[in-house]
Length: 449
Image (cartoon, rainbow, N blue to C red; front, side):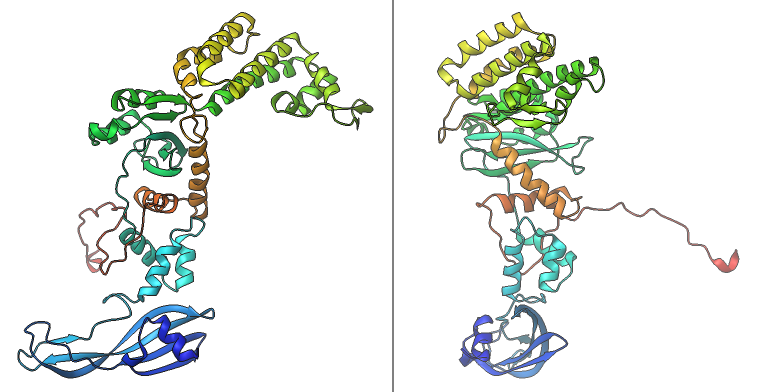
């Protein structure tokens, strides 16, 4: 395929339509000069016969060739009707009238917006346009309506300065069954949640069977009010985090009580990982510079627990719950959780009071998390946490979004395969925030001052 044929294909034209085609390299850009064979269509206004009136030069940005930006210089025919004398231009095969980008460029821009790692500026530089134009295209081509509620709904939040009404978090809805982002709300307050669900018909809300949440009371209140058939499950990760934080508070308290730089201080400060994570303790002994002898992890672990009976008791209870969380099933969860609560109450070393209260207040929701309705997965907000990481990428690469509506549309477009772009010949929609109106003022004449 020669260069002319390659260019013809890229322009989506048949060779018989081209009257002349010439390319010129100038200042690092490829210019494609083209004119088309006149087709003499019927008049757009009266259907009469037409003749050529004149030619107009139209400039259109096109895709790069071998990394070199290209521009179409089109000699466009204008017709005049022999009957009504009205004029019009020949049909535009390269792009929408009024746009300076070809269909191929617009399509490529829309596809680039799907890449969560690209900023508006990067997309603009790739296509030799301004970032303002990219924002306008994003607002017009990516339209994200409210998605229907999923059968298995996950509700979480992400910290952002875009949150409204004095909040600090955006509310994130995910579809735990189909593994996609479902919705973003401007904050996580009960008022915003109630307002959102108020607009959804009961027939749709009744189809939600499961909801996974963290322990934020407005989420629970919203589900109880608006989702009558949904079982609420607490994300196990947040329960474990609450447990670990309680244990950590005791470790820090004990560390502050022992002598600075003592063996106990050294162990509690530098080997906390053995108390918090799963390690193979019977590893090959290694030389320890502090104790000046070879020790394996089990030696150090035993020394840690010997520091304080209180710490040893707290560790036992922590591991008791972790074992339950990892190995229990839904059928036994209620009975075993009741036993665990009793054991915590009986043996609490003084750091688990809030955790015990949490277990009691969220007992039903913790039990529900052990159900495995899809793909043998426990109910959790793991998907929501994963999607939150991608949302943070989108915020970070854009140096922080300020426009929530624009962020919502692009985020759902990137993270939900059910949303497609739609090229349009009119920029009919904008998510640009409205600025403050200018106030009135009196114009003064400097010559009179």
